[in-house]
Image 1 (cartoon, rainbow, N blue to C red):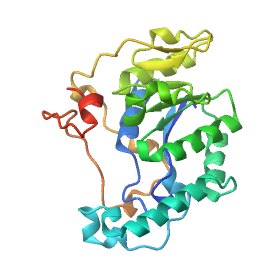
Image 2 (image 1 turned 135 degrees about the horizontal axis):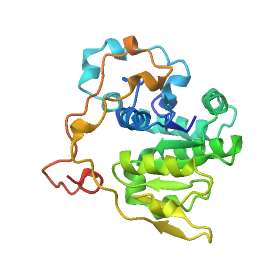
Image 3 (image 1 turned 120 degrees about the horizontal axis):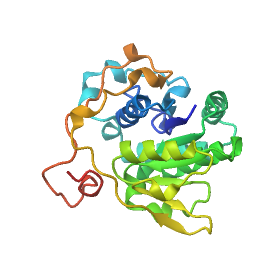
Length: 256
C-alpha cells in the first residue's frame, strides 16, 4: 500500500462510542489519491475495539448535542486521565490492534489527522508506526500542524507536515515517496527536514478552485466500518467561511 490514512483513537479511549464510522476529510483525501493512481485506505482507529454498551446511537439528543456537553466537568477530567493512562499502556488492546493493521497493510507512508487535543495520542501512534518499520514515512496534517509545523517537526519520528488543504500536496508527496530519488523541495505546502537536519518549507499549493472537480469521499476505502451502525453521516457543502472570527482556525487553514 502507498499510504494508510489514520484517524487516531480518541472517543473510544474516553469510554465513549463514535457517532460516525469515518473521517470525512480523510475519505475525501483517499478518493482524490485513488483517482490519481495511489493505493490507499482509511482507518478510523476508534473502530478497532468493541465499544462499551451505550444507547447513544438510539438517543435523538445525540444527533444535536455532543456527548461531552452532557457530562459533568469532573467526569470529563476522569476520562482525560483514562486517556493518559491508556497512552502510557504499551500492551493495551487498541495499540495491539493498530499494530496489526500497519503490519498487515505494509504502507510506504502513513498520514495522520492531527488535532490539538489529540497531541499525546498522535505521538503514541507515530512511535508505534516507527517501531514497526522505521522506513515508513510519517505525514501529519490538519489544524494543529498547519499552525505549528516547526514545533511538530521537533519530533524526529515525524517526517512531513502538510499545510492547509491536503489534496494537491499529499498526492505530490506520495508520488515523491515512491521515487528512488525523491525531491521534497518540489512538493508544495509541506514542511520537512533536509539532509542536514534543517527544517525547510515549500511554496504554497494552489487551492482547489472547483470543488465539483473532486471525487466523492471514498467511504468504501474505510476499514472495519459498518455503516448500518451509525445514524450520523457527514457531508461537505463548502470550504472556508465568509467570516473571520478570531477564535476560529478556519481563518488560517481554509482561506477561501
